[in-house]
Length: 173
Ligand code: AR6
Picture (spheres, rainbow, N blue to C red):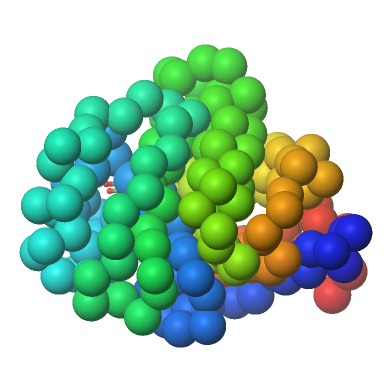
């Protein structure tokens, strides 16, 4: 717990977080289906999602926009564009902005629980440990601003990702 906010790091699939109000998509600028997290979210949500996202695109690195969740069990999907590591610069600030903007947006929308994948650590090439540190700092930096969000869950796909994020969030194992 940090104030009124519970922080969790779990291993799992971001499309299987039935108890969360919102999940975050590691999107592409055009908010199209794509691969990785984005592909999994769009497949699970159905084709209406791409349709609903069209007027919201394009987005810039660090930006966050929100849509309905359609076939997913959550209320909303928050789409963030992470930086391509060392191409979109400063990569650490742009990655931090994703987490801060997504949490502020969730809070404004009265959402109480939000799940994040490890944005930018797949196709966008951000080294895992560094991304985990930037993420943990960014999350901690906005917690005191949040009035509605009371649960933030990092949903890590692999073993190594879980270890790196638990370490960065000082959770031990
Ligand atoms: N649940 C949780 N984490 C996942 C899942 C899942 N279902 N699938 C993959 N991961 P990526 P990026 C992990 O590439 O680096 C897309 O094609 C994965 O192991 O999805 O921000 C978009 O269209 C990795 O650790 O996101 C964009 O073009 C992390 O999620 C681009 O990739 C992020 O991997 C975005 O790249």
